Amino acid sequence: MKRQPQRTPEPEGGPWYKHPWPWILMAIPAASLVLGGIMLWLALQSDDGLVVDDYYKQGLAINEVLDKKQRAAELGLRAVLTFSEDRRVVRVLVHGQPTQGAPLLLRFVHPTRAGEDQIVTLHPLGGSMYESTVAALSAGRWHVVLEDEAATWRLSGTWHTSASQLLLEGSAAR
Image 1 (cartoon, one colour):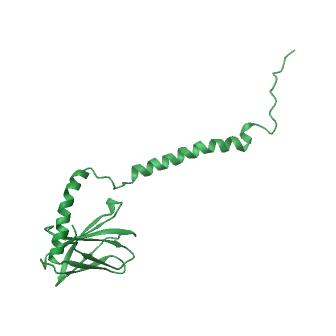
Image 2 (cartoon, one colour; image 1 turned 60 degrees about the horizontal axis):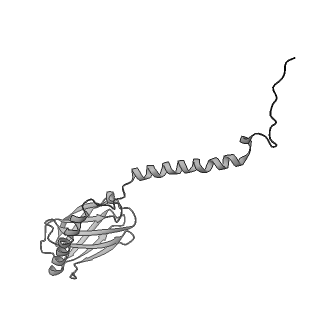
Image 3 (tube, one colour; image 1 turned 30 degrees about the horizontal axis):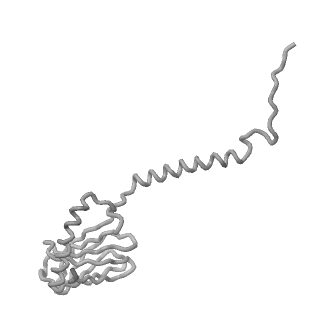
C-alpha cells in the first residue's frame, strides 16, 4: 500500500505572507534603501557651492577687497540700485563717480548657490545713471557688488528680492 506524505499543518490564520506584520517589518529597510538612493542622487546632482579650493589665497586677498572699499569711501561713492517690477531691469544712480561714462560691473552673488551668480555690465544712460537687463533671480537674499571695470573701487551690500531699491555706500571702517 502506498503511503501518502504527511503535510505539516498550517499555522492558525494562514501562511506568513497573508499577515501584515512581516510586510511592515520588510517595508522599513526597503524604504531606507529607496530614500538612501534618492539622497545619494541629490548629493551627486546638486552643487553646494560652499567649499572653495583656494581658501588660503582668498584669505590673503581680503586686504585687496578692503582697500577697494576704502578707496570708494575716500571718493565719496554711493549708489542707488532700482529694480523694475519684474526684476529684469536694474538702474543704478552713482553719486561721486570719478570715471563717468565708463561701463560698470554689477555682480549678484547668491549666498549658497554659486551656479546662480550673475555678472552684469551696466551701460551709461547719461550723467551718472546706468542700466542693464538681468536674468531672472531666484527669490531670497543676494549679495550685490558694484565696481568699475578696472576694479579700483568697490561698493557692496545685501539685497532681498522683495525690495525694489538698494543703497550701496563705501565703508571707511578698516
